[in-house]
Amino acid sequence: MGYAAVNGTMDDVNKVLFSSANDAVQICFGLVSILIFWLGLMKIAEKSGLLNKLSNLFKPLMKRIFPEVPPDHPAMGYILSNTIANMFGLGNAATPMGIKAMEELKKLSGGKTTPSRSMITLLALNTSGLTLVPTTVIAIRMQSGAHSPTDIVGPTLLATLCTTTAALLIDRYFHHRRRRKK
Image (cartoon, rainbow, N blue to C red; front, side, top):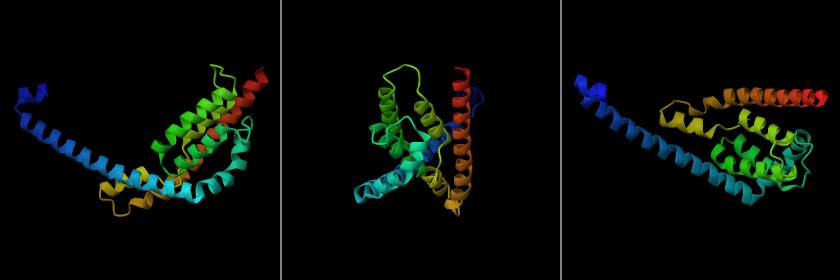
């Protein structure tokens, strides 16, 4: 701003500031509407029992990924909910479930201050972020006027499948390496 004031281009800076603020508000409303839509669909899926069915579908896989977590422990429910929400690109909805999962995993490990194997695995799984439907990216592409905003679905699925596989393999490698050193 100081540079613009000295060079006499303050009007241009003000125009860009207000134009950018207007664009930001429009993007936010677009993203909020898409997020509300998907959260509504998730609520319908929950009420209809679809989330339960998806959880049951993924439960055997999650039992293998998180062998220290008892299948009926609350942590497993939060892990499943978190993973499913992330798969549908609902990171904002998944975050509270991920936090609750971490809290339950901490209780399961006896309240230790060092992270348990399951906590590290959950962090790796969340960071890699397997995504079936990248709702936020689709919303941004729609707001930006993309001709086919859903063209990103295939590449996103492939990329996140690779990152999730890599994250789990690296997690296992370091876990087994740490065990051998003991």
